[in-house]
Image 1 (cartoon, rainbow, N blue to C red):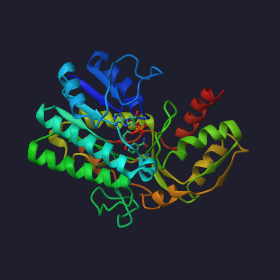
Image 2 (image 1 turned 90 degrees about the vertical axis):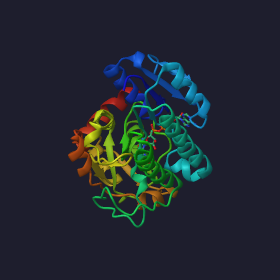
Image 3 (image 1 turned 180 degrees about the horizontal axis):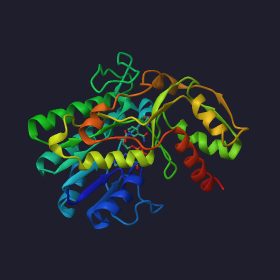
Image 4 (image 1 turned 60 degrees about the vertical axis):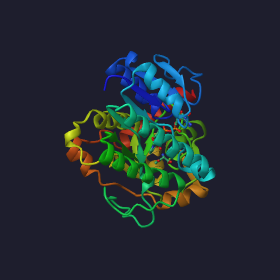
Length: 315
Ligand code: NAD
Ligand code: AKB
């Protein structure tokens, strides 16, 4: 793992993963790419390539030019946007992924990493402490693309020896870059509205319990898996990863400990149906056993830190 290409680097996760990579591997060894321009200097310390992940030739030319041996592909259409434009979700999440996989095989890349999601679960899955292995029949296009990605990861590992790694991220909470159109985005928006207006109208129902994770844990877990000893890994693109679980009601109660007058109300929309068949919690014992995962951020610590950091932005 000498030279890394991060595709989709300007998004919620990429904008925080890239600086950590810079600290660890050096800016010269991390090349970033996105379909958008880096207008706000989010990843200004790195060589930047404007690449659409569906463009095989553009990725190939970046691999050759920068002598890339590792790709992290974060380019994706998330769950809510994916339901509004399923064709686009398939094209970016699957055609883009296949480009990365085929080039990974062609250039014998050291490893590729592409996230999966708790969206792989569905109505027939076990939704409490969702097992690593269970029925995966999601009812969203986003979920379908993520299950397909996990199956492709296994296939290309088995038949072509591609070292493919991925985590089923829960909803990620952060303040640096806004989330990109998912069902768990409420758990970020709520902090801005709590600080600005002391009230928030939630698009999920009060009892929608989902697994969530604070960004520092997401970054740490991602790097742990990326660097894990290949011989210890029994899975490829599909590690369950847990940290905390809560409903909007529980999150609001935690915020109220800091802002007593904060009020939450509910106006559920189509995203309630998406959340309904996602797990309340996940069993991450494989990640713990195979590469030592353990979360460090719980709900009270996350809420306190988010309120402190978001306050700096809204003021
Ligand atoms: P995001 O939407 O915030 O960022 C995605 C980035 O990809 C954006 O910068 C966007 O400009 C870029 N992009 C979009 N289309 C592209 C294309 N055609 N070519 C190149 N770049 C393109 O997403 P994120 O939250 O950072 O998610 C990264 C990965 O993690 C995705 O695979 C997502 O499914 C997964 N994931 C995220 C979460 C979460 O809560 N953030 C949870 C589970 C899984
Ligand atoms: C979304 O809500 O779509 C993402 C995810 C959990 O995959 N945050």
